[in-house]
Image (cartoon, rainbow, N blue to C red; front, side):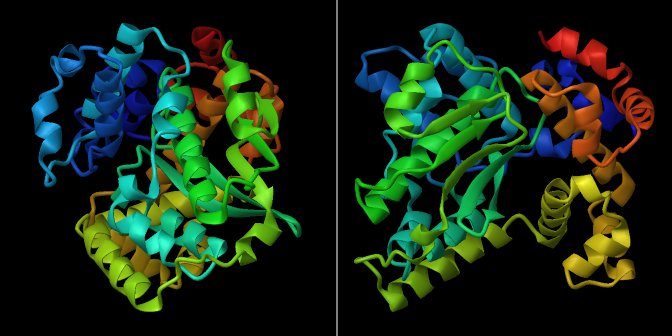
Length: 358
């Protein structure tokens, strides 16, 4: 693992700019979350211009529909907002106020889908168009349960509760808009510890809550996937989806293949997938995948190590799993091998990383 990747997965990386990592500093994300965050503040009569100090942004710039921000900039503004408001459930407050209209073309594509399952899959496939600061995936939990899972892009423990709250609250608000107020998830699973404002979670999500879990995901009954949407319009859905795809493709083919590799690795970490395995899942030859990654300046092994290190740090911060169990989660059957690998990635043993996060 290179020094740039090592610095990314340490706790210092969550607090300091990672100028060596384009994922952290490239401005490619629509500022939707910052827009909703400042709108909430203004509706409450709170001053928020100071949240943008040192970020390279101003509040007025958020009105520009062409604006794109980096994770570093969004991180800076959200951290300042959390400090200024002192509101532990700020992510819930932002997310539950969002609507299909907040998602623009993506909201239109979801609303005009044939079924709730189709809308869910469209939203997941194009979540970056909506300005998401995390990655998401669709998971089949059991024959009767499916889930929307969240994968942090960085080891950003201080912001993880806000990002999960915003994503899951907005997703539930939109699900109820699509499927009706009777929509209820089965449970919400979160890797971080139970927060002091847990009652706010219970009041809004109205389902079983699991903190210190292995995953960040909201689980729903699979039967909801077949629920028909009354606003279905095949032509509008096709047009909106095409425009979403155009926006998504602006990132470029290299970034797209890197994101696909990361997504597959996260979903199969327990099985230690190798490059040939990932290439097969992407319907590509090993040579083509290696070349596409190289065009983006990336190496498969470094991506694999970073994804494993980020996942391990996420679970260490959650605090409920043992070091051996965390090793199993990311593909190490021998705890000693996991400890050696983790120290190579981050410069510290797992127990030290857990103590540092406490």
